[in-house]
Length: 216
Image (spheres, rainbow, N blue to C red):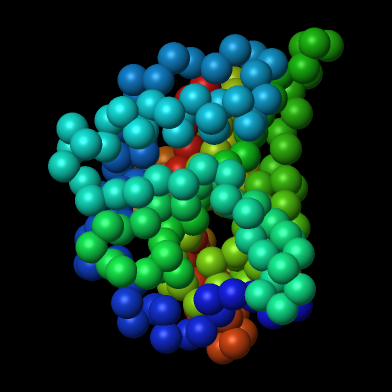
């Protein structure tokens, strides 16, 4: 499969220093003023509502953004879609649609009708989540991306702790460069986290993943 835009040179034209954390802070602030999801609300509807809300909010923050929801990814050779990103953030002053920040969303700690709670941790960490970035399927050639967890029972510190532990257990599978830090993000307040992963040079080398947890 030939992934469009997979040149390592994309990293050289990535967002200005500090813009990623400014963008992620905006996402967290937008969430605070969004109507809370219902217990059984599916991920796609939550993401759709958050998108519409952010479109209204970012001009008020003066951010030079374009936000693209549910964006298909195509094989450059065959034209066949092989994936779809939840959010793609572009900087309006960078004249390339190949340079963007992907934010992948997942529900965690989902209450069940029986009264139990489905953690959904492997969907976040595994082939449907973080591994998509590490394999180069998502954000190929780009140095940073983010995961956004909708914590359906509201216990964001507990959810972050569970993801941290699973990342440690799967460190080899996740090609972890160092131990991930949750609750110790260099800019964002706890319990948000940051992890760094090795990736082939064909996909741009190491990638940093920011981890955001919001109470649903």
